[in-house]
Each structure stands twice: as structure tokens, then as C-alpha cells.
Image (cartoon, rainbow, N blue to C red; front, side, top):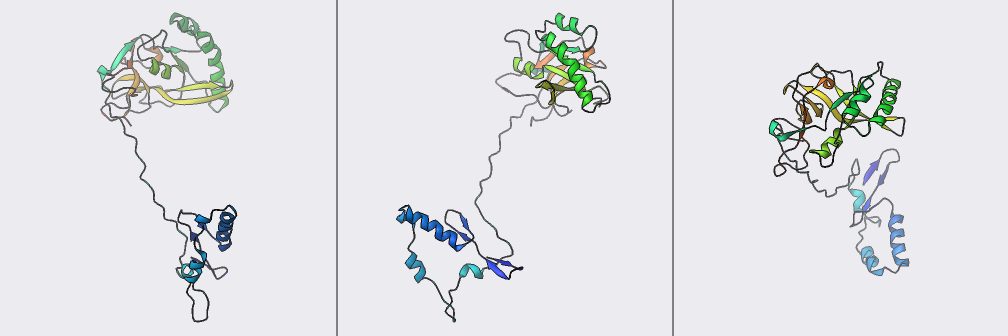
Length: 267
């Protein structure tokens, strides 16, 4: 029961065995009435026995035990199970867990030789990329950027059963310069054009790791290893001329794990 100061009354709640809460007596009466009409006589308690169990005070009024236990607030105590935590697979990404791939290259877009470079790399979607890049740049400026950002394209798998095909598909796409340097180098984030005029960004970044002295594609964090890495020191990723390496650990040790840490557990 709860004391209601504005009205000076006591409000009681009644709890059924299944946990259902009833605030009014007529709700309980209606519930049993529906059971009676439905012929569920086995679900109706012995009303007469309940009446005989009532106690009365000196004035002949029924003593309501629920209304004697007055509280400031209503509380409901329910049994809850501790949620199961997903078991995390710990894995430390090291140099031997990467494999060279000719499929991944970084191409600078919106330049005079962008088309030729894409054709040279046999990128099947080259025409689409050249068409959509100016629109993405325009929309980025339209949405608040005060500069025309540099755009890069990361190529994906160009032949069947390429090493790290799934990860290459994940990193493939257009990236824009965030104009917010990371480790004093340019930082690019993957951007996607949807429905012709809507932009969406993913968590994939091209950034420089000062700790490992390499360029990487993946999380924007020194605590996370890259999905792909290039171990060459150049001011900008489109200047790289060394083969990239894709994460491909021993399947027996870590299967379908995206690298997330160097010398740290993946989380």
C-alpha cells in the first residue's frame, strides 16, 4: 500500500501468483467474471473460504492487511537472470598474420589521371567510381564541410578466390579526408552514397600508426591492428608504391576474426 498525501487515502496494489498487478478490486472481480463466463471454474478460487478467513476490528469493519503495510513508493520485485556475456576471442595480430595482396591499392580520385589509374588496375567499377566521386564531394561540402575534401578509392578483390576476399570487400570503397590529422598524418574515412543523395560513413579509416610505423585500414586507434597494412613511410596513402598486406591468420588459431589489437586483446 502507498499513502497518497493529496487525497489522504491509501492506495493498494494486489499481486496475482503469476505477477499480474491489480490496482482496483473491481479489476479482480472482472477477471474472475470473465473466467466464470468462459467456464474456467478450475481457475476460480474458493470465494466462500476467502470470505470466512476475513478478520474484523472492534467496530465490525473488515481488517485489510494490505492497507496496513504502507510504503512511500510501490516496488515490484522480480527475479532476473544474469545476462550471458558473449565470449570474446582474444587474438594478437602480428606481422606473420598478414599476407601480401596485389588486389588492394589506394587511388587518388578527381585528378586527371584517376581514370587511367583505375583502368590500369583493372577495376571493373571504374566508370561508376568516376561518376559518383564528384557527387560525394559535392554532398560533403553541402553538408557543412568548408573545403572540398580529398577522395581516395581503395580497390577490392579483382579475381575469384582472392586472398582475404571478405576483408577486401569490407575495405573497398571511397574514403574522404576528414581534415583532422591522426598522428600528424592525413586520415580518411569510408563514405557511402545511398539512394542517390544520402551519405553514410562506416568505421573503416585509412590512418598512420606511429607506433608500428605503417599505414593501415581499419579502426582509428593505436590499440587496434589494421585489416590491411602497408609498411612504407609516405606522407599520404595514395603515394604508397609498396604492396599492401591483408590480415590472414592461421585459421586454426583465429577464424573469421577481424584484427583489433597489436599486443592487445580484440574486443
